[in-house]
Image (cartoon, rainbow, N blue to C red; front, side, top):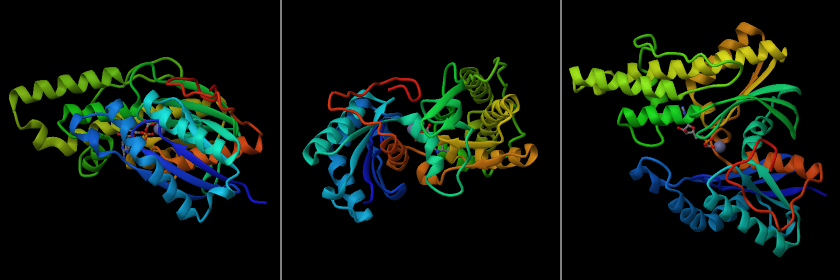
Length: 337
Ligand code: KG4
Ligand code: ZN
């Protein structure tokens, strides 16, 4: 008999549902929330309300696209942590109610673990142990992955995440939220060598991006004082130069992690792994250092339920189920929920 799992992701501002059958993702439906654009960032209360409106149609679409009926489901999975508590609650309560009504098991999934396992949705897949640079709007981590559900964080950001560095730079430049994809777009037309931004000297495998943000703020302030049109006239070169620095900060640490561990299978994951410059840099480093490299397809980089589904499938095989007393957590370490 086939194993069909419905997975729900609602940790931030995307309501997503996916269906996985015997380890293959059959549907991955994602509803974004435009309401936050006018505020320049995600407004938690508005995100929870939008999740409530979206969740029923999104789940319907995912089941329909997969051609799986509710009665056929073997389990329901949801993102338990980390994320905005109100947003997580919507997915958690919905999953609990559905599992109770259908009398099937419930599976609680850690969002960051799921970003890493997005690398198993499509072939080719990495071999254990491998390294994953997980770069999202809230996290920046280098993870050593020994098995599907056995991961260790080797290094992480001490302040801002890489996605935040992109988004905050965009805000300084007057671009709308989320700025990451726009910086990526402008950077393609710009000269990355035109302006130089500092690389922080942080020991070990940890990261820091707050100094970079401050240097960009002063850089823009000083140049705008002399020429009020400086940002508009140099947008592509500024974006290319900032993006280059964010990428070199990430890649230098990833190369160091590969050197220290001797691991040669290297992945990236999370929203910032959609960045074209980072994807190209990973391919370059892989060639230079002899790594095998893996990057999820675009739809599985930013927040999506497909990655929750693949994680849930491995938890299902391991018999790792949650009971109805489970509750979401705004913060928790990878795999520790
Ligand atoms: O993983 P994700 O969708 O949500 C979190 O779990 O945080 O990551 C969102 C982050 C945002 O900061 C967004 O600006 C960034 O990913 N992002 C990008 C690109 N696409 C999304 N950053 C740079 N270049 C992109 N193409
Ligand atoms: Zn995420």
